Amino acid sequence: MDVTAKVKVVLNSCGGRLNSQAKIALVEKAMQAAGLDYQLEPTDYPNHGLELARQAALDGWPVVVAAGGDGTINEVVNGLMQAAGDSEPATLGILPLGTGNDLADMLKLPGDIATACQRIAAGNTRPIDLGIVNGHYFANNSAVGLEPMVTVEHEKIRRLKGDIRYIVAALKAIANAKPWHMRLKWDNGAFEGPLMLVSVGNSPRTGGAFYMTPQAKMDDGLLDFVYAFGMSRWQLLRLLPKTLSGKHIHHPLVSYLKTTTLSITASPPTPVHADGEVIDQTATEIKYQIIPQKLRIIV
Image 1 (tube, one colour):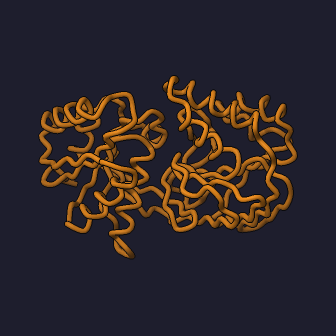
Image 2 (cartoon, helix red, strand yellow):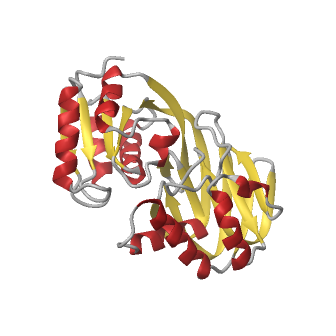
């Protein structure tokens, strides 16, 4: 696949480890060194990446590159899918400039931006599944209950960076956790009772460090999901270190399953996140589904 003719770069100007000008300079130097003919557009406000990606796809750009973290990728993916409708979406490229970079890491993409641009120039692709939660697409992970509460806490923490920021956020969220009453229904089963979390994965890792759905594969046409029932805060705290390796799924109070659809009714309302971005603060009805091998990504 020759992508060198036309590459649109949507760059997240906020977040990550570098300031906006440093990121732009880094990406432009790497793009030029890789021989790519590109146009770069930085984002100016939340969801601007979605708008830029949608317009780029509508304008006929065959490849749209998300330069940022998982949240940036999520915006670009949703923009590409909105533009595509029932057609095949534009190809996605990734330059991992975020703090977590879960999807990029799980795809084994290089963290070095110069090398990542060379991969884009080579143009080798693979198809991956996409999840949908209440009409919002996600490529990596989504969750209700405790996990999006961690995301909310994470956004409040400014003094810490990297994985430790996620871990501190998780500890704070668990300290304030109260169970939701949830009804779950999936392809061949159901559950009703008090739950602290339901995590849905298209890939194994979320939050930069947590292997919530460690057996997930991005091209098997299935969503992996995990839920923990009847757990006290102390049990959750003891379980947290095991999520760093995926061993939590062997706990007797944890269920791990695969499905093509999942519906959740929650009381009281729960926040919902998709690829680390909170998309709803007060959801009571949440519906998941998978679209097999819908998106091509340059690897």
